[in-house]
Each structure stands twice: as C-alpha cells, then as structure tokens.
Image 1 (spheres, rainbow, N blue to C red):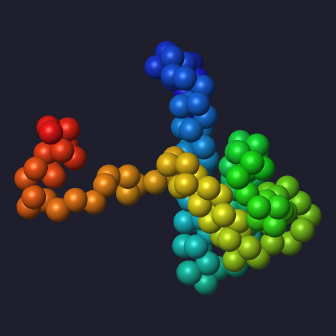
Image 2: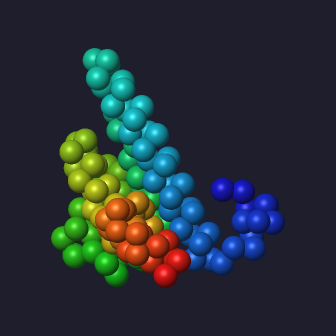
Length: 133
C-alpha cells in the first residue's frame, strides 16, 4: 500500500484499514504457498515467514478480533501470533488463520458471494436485482 499516493490518502480511514488487512492476508497466503510448495517437494522448512506474516495480520486486526472472537479462539490466535518461543505446528497456524478469516468474512471484508441468488430466466426478478425495477 502506497501511503504517499494521493488516491490512498483521500480514502476514509476505514477503507484504508480494510486494504491493509487485505494486503496482510495476501502476504500470509504468499508465505503459506511458499511453505507448502517447499514441503511438498520434500524439503524441510520451518514456519518462520508464515508466522511472521500471520503475526502482522493479527497485530493490525487485534482490536477487531478482541471484540468478535470467543476468548478461546482469541487465545488460540494470540498464541500463534505473539508467543514466538512456543513451537507451533502447521495445523495450529492454519486453524488460527481460518478463525481470523471467518470474522473477516462475517464483516464482508473477504466475502465473495455477496450477490443475492436469483433465477436468471425470470426477467422481472433479474431486472430488480440489477436495479431496473
């Protein structure tokens, strides 16, 4: 995200924060993809980059998570993100990521299926969905 860009700085803070969170998700996915590729090729690799990027996602969304998560889920995410001396296995990392993603989906930030379902062959219903009715 380019904070020196006039287009970025003219956006409302909520929109800027949403873009930062989306960027952090992307960064984590890139690290996870690299980890998986290396692991699938049989090489031994640790979770350092993935955990570091996941930690950034956690830190930028911590207050949101504190409001939305159960204490148990928040603790799972916090341990993976903050307790760097604790050995974390890959399934724990992915579980924590999915916990965060569920909240972001509920808020509509990463939700893709936002269009209401309708039957295309019903012209009146289709027109109404598209704003013509």
